[in-house]
Image (tube, rainbow, N blue to C red; front, side):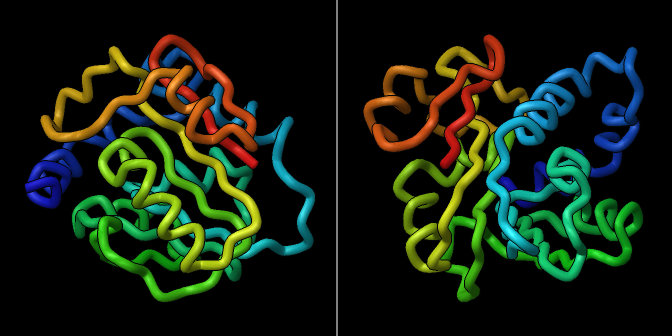
Length: 181
């Protein structure tokens, strides 16, 4: 069901998420990019895996990491088609991120909805299997309404702090919480 919903959304999604200072839909992405820029780990050519890469916003949020060391996974062929159009040098793979991905990475990234669809245990499963060293997750806050998918778990800032006690948990804004290490 999520696949079909995001495939349909891929038709209009790009028209809403156009870069520009006055685009209200890009406010959260700009805030996430600023957080990443200030807090990213200094690794030489880190291999980054993005779960739920959608149409590729993760690439600009992460400051355009090397295409050689970035792979984005998403369930929606339509979203991935948009990502490939915008970022033809990057690798994108159609995959349900609720199932195991057999690869290795230094940094596991998952933002804006996907962490809530996968859940904390699913993210940690990927992190362990991929033998990651760092993570950057942006979760919907407990009162956020997705508007697309009905079945996902929201987490309060306090809950994330208790689950990720050894990580940095930060409120991005009223809608989102960041967990990183």
